[in-house]
Length: 150
Image (cartoon, one colour):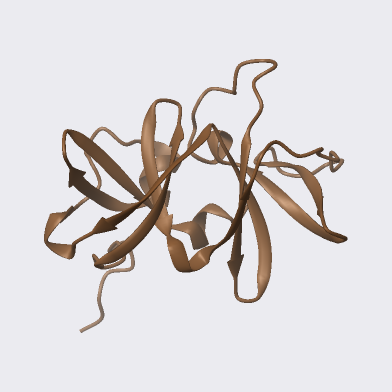
């Protein structure tokens, strides 16, 4: 018997690098995070998918910048508001994620992991592995591999 393909990734204990996006707290595994940068100059890419905000020059390396607001179906960032860049490394390749602000690195425990909230819809439902209940806060665990696949 084969397992259904829509099952979310299993809960893990460890550390998540957290960030804010449209008022919600998200997290990705720290082992994927290469660095965090303040707003960077973006070069637009003609005919690119809307989630591709552009390219950044990271010390001579050209890195694709993904707009997480677009990927998660959130409204655009307010005009004149700079994004924070989280550079992640997956399979040896660097990709940057544009977020509203960076938060803390938090320890999470698999026993606090739950299925994604029923309120998530559309693209967000596909990109969220689940949620961790923190003190008075819900931390949405982002599937970084799916998030960077434009």
